[in-house]
Length: 508
Image (tube, rainbow, N blue to C red):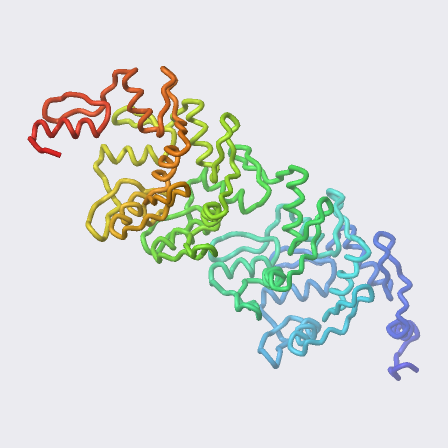
């Protein structure tokens, strides 16, 4: 009476009527899911039991229904008889083609009564509704963990069996999902088919695009239960929650070090293997991180994408920009617990602390002299090798220091001011200007009377570390600067230079 369709027997007629009434009298005792036919319930129960009676003779893979086996078999034959007339894409099932067609029409006939969100697939709506009810009806018999759908349970089950049936033909890497393999293959082809309409950026998979789009909308649907902080992805909130618990679930099998993120563990593992898979096409140098390669490439292009809004200066790293910004704000967040002196960088504090401990971990193999920091040590080594890699384009003078910047040395930059006459460091007391921040600092002590460098032997104080070092040689008797003519020793390079004029007859 409903649709006029006719049947040969009463049983089939009764089953058909349930499609109109929505009646589902056959209920699963495991997950409360209901079915219109007893046969469908029986097939469904195999999911809970893990029973898969239908086996593929090609690859040995098993399935819970004959229909799924038939669909799977087409992956071996390559048969995709159902073709989309709009985009020529082909499918193994008419149902899949029907669902796909909605990506062209935009049709989403299935609506969630709780939040109003719409879906193109009834099964997707059903899974979504479980996010409201919290229902996870699919339970793993091995470990008791529950899942929102059978697919997630099947994938999880492979963590127990170790099964990864989908292998990449390019690199041999295996995956437990065909979809994950497909996404991985794009790392070889460079294909990024999912485009952001806002900024034009492309992504290799729909999930990555969805997470990215939230940077435009500001949407952060995943909230930390501990502190209320919002995140754009479930993975991000999970990793964040480990900062509260202190949990680092990913452990290195080589050294036992633990990590929060798989990416960090992977990168760390390369310190053991020596693997450096990211190679610069300009100079051939290799790196163990893609990010490090990206930064390195900027040394070839001269690109400095991180700009200071105060002065316009560019940097290759956001960290360096953050440190630079402190020169404008005057912020010095790192404090020495021994003397109270503050620093803008953690490295500066570490180097300074060695002035208290006397620790000098960097030793020169040529002369035995030790240094508190690697930068000064590297600069010193060039006094032995004669290397001066930084050349002034104005006068050709070369310098040994590699300073803070990879491309341009601090010494060279300071020297360049002798050509431009620039003196950017001004004393607020007397208005005198200097071409070095260090020279300004020493000058300011002439106003305050401060002499922060004290001799531990006699208590005499000095305005800078160099003067203290020269003075200290009075106590040790050390005269490290030798005259090449007569071999006489002196406490400073200035004294030896003045002495050498007695040999050359040169007058000042």
